[in-house]
Length: 146
Image (tube, rainbow, N blue to C red; front, top):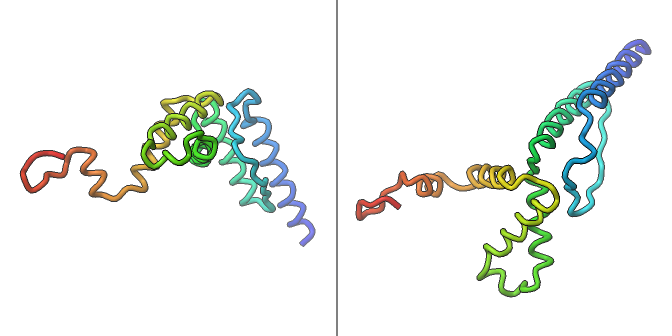
């Protein structure tokens, strides 16, 4: 039983060493902290492997300047709460989105990558009729394309 624990501990340590030496994050990456969040941890080999996959994914996203949906959401939230015309937000949604995109870009994220993440989320969360209408595949009863 003791050897199994030592084996698991050494496997976790080896995976973590590979993660930190090969997939270390760029210290000059864009700042994604809009709101502080708690840091979590892991405990065995499966979690160590997940940390390795996550480190590779993050490093790839850092290299592309691609924000996560969480970072975009935080930027949108900060744009809403810091907007001087908070009462007019219902009428002027585009100004809030533009403020968020400007904030993401000023924090070092690539604007095209940010918009790509937003489009991906929209496709994921919109219903099929909306997606078909945006693509021009839905015809109203009059026969024209929407």
